[in-house]
Image 1 (cartoon, rainbow, N blue to C red):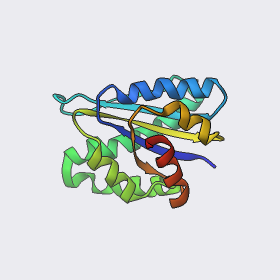
Image 2 (image 1 turned 60 degrees about the vertical axis):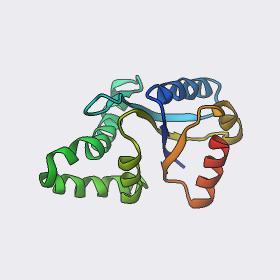
Image 3 (image 1 turned 90 degrees about the vertical axis):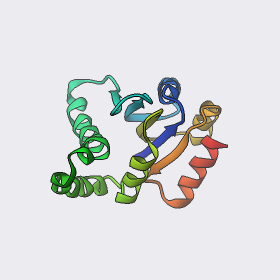
Image 4 (image 1 turned 180 degrees about the vertical axis):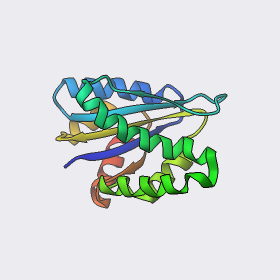
Length: 161
């Protein structure tokens, strides 16, 4: 199963540090990372900066569209107001197709803001215990996931505890 998770960090560099760890656990074969993006939002900036994983052109097109729609709806469309209504409705349908609910999008939009950062990850085939061990100390908060409630609680406890 493909898993989508969003982790919020209280510092601007927290998500970058977590992405470094993600690449280490991927290199060790503990997790298969389909794609990820790092969002940083300096306290004095009007909008966030987004960095994507380096990948081949074929995969970049598909994931680039996914991330573009997601970040556009979360952080850029609200700036243009009511005209964004149709685009947001379309986004909701696309996100539901990959198991991301409107409530999760709202949680991300409300919790991620100036002065912090977030790591957005799409993964599969992970050894949760070993991966969680490597992430201890990053102090990230699980903001959204498409895991069922029991699995989400396990992930939250493993990474936050």
